[in-house]
Length: 385
Image (tube, rainbow, N blue to C red; front, side, top):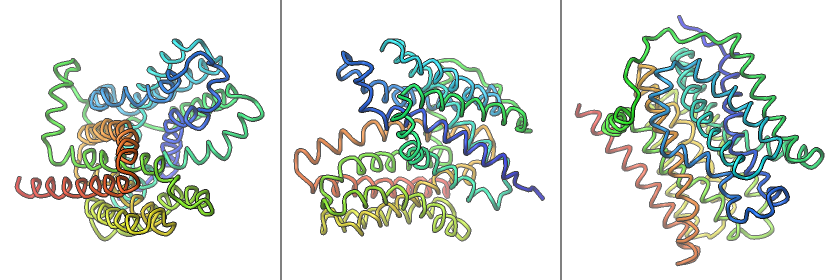
């Protein structure tokens, strides 16, 4: 009977925290960037967004390439490249060089977020996959919390370069440890060619499959709402509870994912848990329409979204047995996640700016309903095959 190597699983999750910090190290310190690039103006936003923009175009290609070069190798390459690029960024080079390094860091990030969950799914005993992949699904929230609690004080004392050096060292440590302890998966190599034509065909294969595409297509509607709601909602929460609610929402999402979500995954398939999360989130948006900025409605919304978060990663191995198809699904999740993150905030801001607060529960509620409908439609397609 397969036994889960929890030390390796936790190390892969730790590598995921480093991947999330590739976004977060400049997101949480964005207000410090004008000190170093005073003439950059609006171009400063590219320091944060260039990592995600690459993910939109290269997510599926990353899944194909990672399966071809093998998962352990891709993971270690992503960690070492991430360490080297953070060390380079610590010199705070001229803006064009910084942007070039961020574009390369986008490739490192994709390698990590495709390879690590694929490795976790293959290393775990079937009974442990739900918990392990739910844990993996917390990597963004936990990384941003750590950067806020520990990274910002480090910047206050040692400057932005100190945080970038710490990130480089963190990535290198995990690269060394995993390089010594992680073995390659015992699975046949992917011999498909890698070219522009093959990447285009890969998109067709992925998004025509109701199994491979399902986690990513649902993830699109989750990511469209998550960051945009956390960005647009605060001004509508009463001043007296705003800080408490906004601090509690990400923690509630993680907590619900790791408790209620894990329990539900033992009794129902991951897609079922995702549907519960979408339905609950849509009802919470109705609650927020009736009670604008209500504290309990906000916390309940975060808990319901946490169910979608963890179960979406757990759905990948439940729907796809082979490592190659899991890499495809994880690549699609990376691609759709970047699309959702990129579009969500500006579309939500434009909507609320045009029709006021009602635009938030209307747009987010509609996105949650569509996400659930997409999953139901894909489930019906799977039953008919």
